[in-house]
Figure 1 (tube, one colour):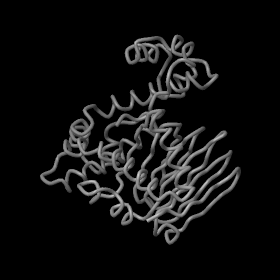
Figure 2 (cartoon, helix red, strand yellow):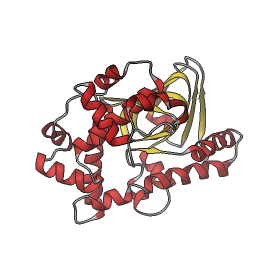
Figure 3 (cartoon, one colour):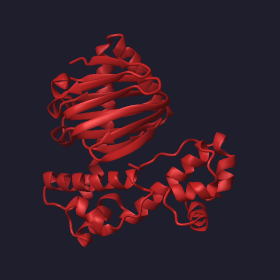
Figure 4 (cartoon, helix red, strand yellow):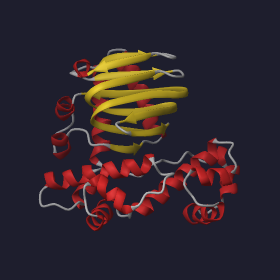
Length: 289
């Protein structure tokens, strides 16, 4: 099934109802302020090709950069807005359509699972090429896009397999609860978040939550939170004129000394040296797969 295509230019706003995405929809947003609002349970894949893409999903807000692929499950109420001189694309459809479109196997039974993936420069080139091909009416290109999505989602298999549960469906259910927490941490990395509050998001006791989180992701919630803060700080060092102390505070560190020590431990260099080499270094990813 070929997608319907919507192109959003500078300042253009589009609202899609649930009935508008009974089949696959490809959105291409370009220019400052191009935005879409989705009303109704729709699953999607979002990719900034240039600039930044701000997503509001439920109560959570996040900003994504070139090379970060955000997958949203069937959430009611999504808003996406391009920031800066942005270019972004989104693939949207009803959950049932995604289940039929993905390849055979465990992931196709689940449809799209919420996650944040990273693609490399070769993947970005393919994304540009596939968008051009789809817009020209090449149906095979749409199949190639689905293959890319299928491959990214398959990376989650290993994490799901490590979740507690006797059956795959039970482990997948646990994984979805943990992913809600992981996305909450990624969106609110600058806040003080304790394990008791995070456990409530997953509807677990603190002990059960920490155990399940570590089993799935091979790190504790606190270690994941610190990693997110450091990666966001590294990005700001590459892109922001803020002073290093201001970046440390903006990313949730108590003071510059603690930030500097953790930054050196993580990256093997100082924040000042990282800023000086910004133009030679690649952009970091925000959430590890």
